[in-house]
Length: 99
Image (cartoon, rainbow, N blue to C red; front, top):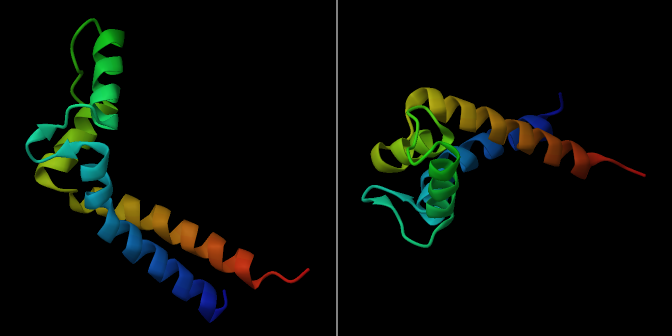
């Protein structure tokens, strides 16, 4: 792997881990709960309808709300960082292609 690809991986990982809390908040998963009229509230409504009125523990809505309220745990940051690194590698490799 060339140095630019490694830099792309590092930048991608760091950027996604740093941006994840802001993205969660923008989607409506906040420390004060799910924001009215947000993407999060739409997801919560759809999940509640599908589950007969409740939100199951461990569901995507529950996990995202927990991360929005308490922060992303270390294991979650590792996953987000790995996804960001993969996107950084792909972007770096794509920009290094010659036709």
